[in-house]
Structure formats: C-alpha cells, structure tokens
Amino acid sequence: MPVNWSIVLAFLVTSSLLGTAKALPVLRYRQITPRSLAPSFVDCPSGAIIRTGDVVGPDEQAWVSAREQATNSSWTDYLSRINLSNVTFMDNRPPKVAIAVSGGGFRAMLFGASILNALDARNDTAVNDIKTGGVLQTSTYIAGLSGGSWLLASLYLNSFPNINTGTMFPIWNLETNLLQPAGTGITNLAGNIRQYSDIADQVDDKHDEGFNVTITDFWSRLLSIHLTQDASIPDDRFTALWSSLASAPSFANHSVPFPLITYTQRTFGEARVTVQANLWESSFFETGSPNAPVRSYLPTQLLGTFMDDGTPQHPPVEDDDGKGSRQICSSRTIFTTKSWISLFLIGETQMPKTAEIHQEGRDTAIIPNPFHNFASVNRSISESLTVELVDGGEAGQNMPLFHLIQEARDIDTIIALDASNDNGGFPNATSLVISWKNIPDRFPPVPATPEAIVTQGLNTKIVAFGCAGLANNGGGNDTYRGPMIVYIPNFNASGISTNTSTFQTSYTLNEVEGFFTNGIAVMRNPNGTSTDVSFAECFGCMLVAPMWRNNPNASDIPQNCKTCLQAHCWDGSSTGNPDGDVGTPATRNYNGTGPAPVIT
Image (tube, rainbow, N blue to C red; front, side):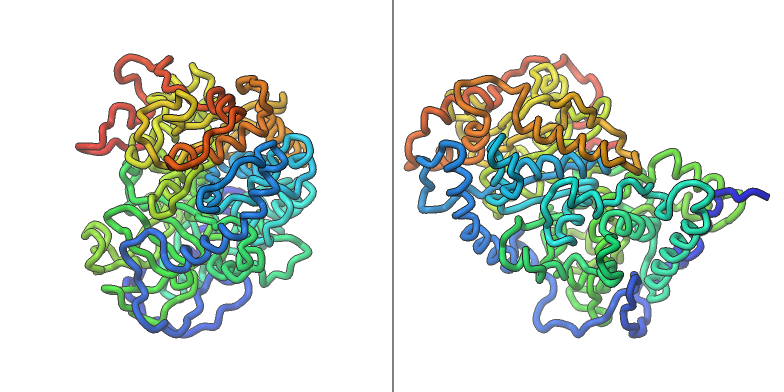
C-alpha cells in the first residue's frame, strides 16, 4: 500500500508530543544532551528572582549605556558621509535609534535582511553608492516578531555576520523545503522520516521531564535546523540558548544592537486574541511584559522554572527551550494554513491522538507561569499555572513597536520595517494604525485608516511620522515628544516581486537575491519626493530630527534638513479616509474604552 505522507507526518508530529501536563511535577536531574529539548537544572541564584516595575532592568540599562558610547564614532563616520558633519549633539548624546522588523514569514525575514544590508557599513554599495550604510552601526535596539524574529535569531546565533546573500543563503538553507528538511520527493521520504523521528525524540525528552509540550516545540526544531544549521558548524550549536548569547563576543563588546523578540499572550483554547492582549518580550537578559497587568520580568536563563509567589518550586531551569523555541513562540502562524489543518484532519480518522491535538488546539508555546501567585501582577495573570505565548502579530500589531515605544527606553527614532501581507502580499500600514490606536500617548499621529495611507501613497515610499513642529508640518499637535517613526514598507522599487506568500516554505537563490536588490532600491527612495538634497541626507535628517524637536536649546535645524523634513514627513492629511465604519482594521472606531475588538 502506498505511504500516506500526511499520516506519516501526523504520526511523527504527535506520537511523542502528547501526554497529560503536570502542574508541579517531581523532577529528576538529567544532564542536557546534544540536540535535546530537555531542560538542565542549575542552583538557585541568591536574592529575588522576579523583578517588577521598571521596564528596563539594570543589565539592559548598563549594556545600553555602553552601546551608546560605542556608537559615537559610528555616528561621526555616518554623518560625515552624508553632508551632515555640521550636526552637533546636545550634551554629546547621539540619538537613540531602534529598528523594528515586522512579521510575515520568510518574506519578512528576507525584506528585513535586505534593508539591514542597505544600512550596513560593511556593505560597500550601502556606504559608497546609496550612502545609507552605517545606520545599523549607530542603532541601539533591534526588535523582531514572527518572521522578523527569525532574522534576528539567524544573525545573533551566527555572530552577526555580513548580511548579504553570499553569507546568509548557506545559513538559511532556503532552497530546502521547511517542512521536508531532507529534501522533497519520494526519494527523500526515508530521510524525512528519520529527521522527523529525531525531532520527536528531542521533544519527548522535554515531556519526560514533566514539562508541557505542544506543536510549537516540534515546529521550533524544524525551524532551527532550517535557519541555523550550517554544515560547517558542529551539532552542539543546535542546543544554544537565547540567554547564552549574552556572552557572544559581538554582543558582549557592544558592537551590535540590543535584540528583543516579542510575543502575544493568549489564553488556552482561545481562537482569537484581543487588541488589548498582553505583549511579552525576551532579551538575552530577561523575559516578561511591559503591559500593566504584568510589568514583571524573569531572567531569561531561568525561563521554565516553576514559580509560586516568586519562589522556585524546583531548581531553576535554564532557558526552557533551545534557540529554536526562543525565536519560535513568536512564529506559529504557519499552522493556521489549510495544508497543516488537512494534515491533522487526515490523521484524525487513523490516530486518536492526532484528533486530540487538533481539537485542543495545542498550537501555543506553553511555559510555566513565572508570576504564579505573585502579588505584583494582575490576578488574570497570577492565577494560571502556565502562560501561553503565540505569534507576536496576533493582536494586530505586526510590527514590534510597542516594546520600543516604552518611555523607559528613551528611544528617539524607530525605523519600522513592514513586510506585512495586508493586500496582495504588500503592507498598507494596518499595523501602524492599530498600534497608534492602542498606545496613543507615546505613539506619533498617523493617518486614521489604511485607506488614507494608500491614497496618499505612504505605503510605497519612506515616510516619517512624529514630525510636528518641524518644518511647519508633521501631523498632530506640537506637543508630541515621543519617538519619531521612519516607516519603510515592502514595495516594488526594483521591478522584482517581493510580495511572496507568508506560507512559502522555500526560496531559490535568485529569489533571495531579488529581495536584496529590491532592498537597495527601496533605500534609494525611487518613489519618494524629489528635493535638491540627496535622499541619503534626508534619511539622516529624519534619524536625528527628534533632537531639534524635543530640546529647546538645540542648535538651529540646517537648511538641508528643513528641506528634507518638509518633503518626507507626513503632513497630517486626512485625504483618503472613508466615511463611517467600513470594516478592517478591527480597531478603526475603537477609542480605548469598553470591550476590546478581536483580531481574527
């Protein structure tokens, strides 16, 4: 009888994943083995484990302070290349710049990489031709969710290499289908079965230690192999932990931005999340949420520890998941596709366990709740034994702006890279609108609807928001002092299509090179407003503009920057706004009070 590949995969996925979860299990010590998801146990640290209150912890604060000092020379080099060497910083403090990389599967990963490549001082074309090279080296933070988190993981797990196709394509191994790691076709069936069986054994190790396991554990290992498994690197790198990267040389010497990977909290069994869902983040140092109901943090190294009122209930556990899951609980959207649903449905008639996982919806990343019975968090958080985290974009904010907009991080300018699939594989800034409607106090004014953004052409060029009081335009009133957002959408700037499906699971070298070619073209600003000043100068003016807007003692704005800001800042126009309630986004008429709308 011919092999039914769907049933084979369903069996391999589910056979070692399912079992009864235990709230506070009796755990035995097991040394972590290579290529295993079984946690390792460590001695309890002295003092309090949970930190509550401030969004920025002492480790992050100290690291960012050192990073700002390290970027001084990068700012000098960058500004001198774009005719802005006359710009002086107040109190010798350069602007604090952050980069946000949206979700959108491999499309978002590739678009984000193409723009980072165009901002990289190691790229001769970026430095000498389009002259945007060096911005990456001046940046203090970088955040990613979903496909954006895949990009961050592939960079930081590989010592932040040069971001070009020659370097990244072998690391990403995108020609191999994500769901068939041994290769496609019947000739590779045996290899795929071995690979899936091996991953199932790894996940089973975690389950054997008494920890919840879900489809996300399995999916994370697939993605880890696909994005970070390089034949030239020993297998033990497969077990690298997100928290362990704090000691990587590029991070320890402050030569790269501070990374944040973001998630959305979802209640078990929920089919949808509200736009007011708690948004979580993981740095190498800490994991938690700046949302008011939580506003508490656990050392990322100890994520997975069973806690009660801030006290460990067994020896703390190093990083519940290996490097794959640390990037992946922000990236489970592929399991909503028809191909995976059909895989589960086909298996239901053959194996009851497959039906169980399909019906119970174990598609979240489940971690022991670090804030269980912790008095400082809301009861909606503290009463649960576990926390379920899903794709960071499920609350509608598909760019990780919420975490960067926090006042404690004191960020001046956010470069927002948007590769969302809002319309035909391209963004229309729906995520920007939703973020604005949910965090208005610290978010710059933007057009009220995606329709207005499209009508004004803001989804096909680079535009700055939050310029009020600069060059007589900027949208909103002159009292806004939060971060400016420089919005860079994925659009066709080169004649090469980059609106691929979120669920495309393999890419050829030519397709990847197309993204990188388009990224350079986007940063040339081909569809932007023409001025007598080069776009490279204008981009630099947008990055430093908050210095002039926020400080009354700042020097006068140079004339070239006045020209640039007049041309590239949103002017507050309402052109294109439809009348009444016309559908998506769900938050269009939501004023922040009453029941929150859901994102379907």
